[in-house]
Amino acid sequence: MNKREFLEALQKLLGGLPEEDIQKSLEFYSEMIDDRIEEGFSEQEAVAAIGDPTKIAKEILADIPIAKLVKQKIKPKRRMSALEIVLLVLGSPIWLSLFITLFAVVLSIYVVLWSVIISLYSVAAAFVACAVGGAVSGIVFISLGKGAVGTFMLGAGILCLGLGILMFIGCNTIVKGIVWLSRKIWLFIKSCFVKGEVK
Amino acid sequence: MDIQLKRGLLDICVLSAIKGEDSYGYQIIKDIKPFVEISESTLYPILRRLETADLLTVRTAEHNGRLRKYYHITELGLKRIEDFKFEWQEIVSIYNFVTREEEK
Image (cartoon, rainbow over all chains, first blue to last red; front, side, top):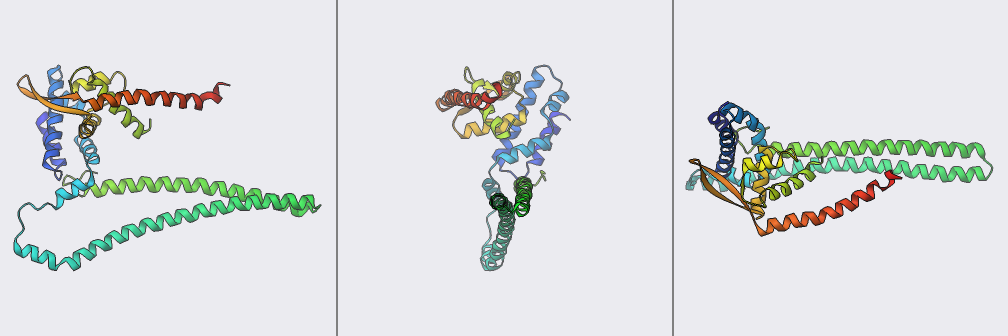
């Protein structure tokens, strides 16, 4: 890939970004390639050293606040005609409510997910509480001379403790997974605002 | 290394690379590379972030018939480096605390 091809590929990938951001990125990478060539690298080598345009576009995108992307996307290319404005206002009961619905759905998915997590943690906590209860009652029964019952309670307590710990480890893994997933989703939403399909 | 941590440390590296005299992208990379792994795609967002935070300023100058951007550290940038040196003392004492058991 030569310099021109590289810059064209990058420009295409950054398609939906604000003009200023595209320009700055292209200038930066163009300068980087030129500096390498000046140092004695061939054009091909210099471009190869910079890396894959897709990856670079992804990093640039990840660094631009989503508010800026949305603003860029909804900025009309030309002034809207009176008819379009009227239609937009008349249509607002439809698109506005659709938008709110979408937001509510996403929000409720999140609430449900976190509720599940909270309840799983509660179960884990309950197991631990049972373990404490088992241990205490076990000791009480044994000291009262009821060895068999006491040993059973103690055993049940230890079982609960084990289950509680397993539960806790499982919950942590799930939470990590959800955090990872929401990052991915966030990046996906961002990439929807860019023509070049950066994923 | 933890990504957030490395990002913060690279910010300081870049500031330090332009501390003595103004520098440009490729030179910054060459200066830092012997110490920490850094690539163009990592440097670019850092420079933009530091510029937005007023830790450095950018000027464009001609070089061999083309334009090159030179980065200049601001007072705020110099202060950031000093703050880092101070914070590092704290990190060292945390490290000493964390490793105290292992030595015994």
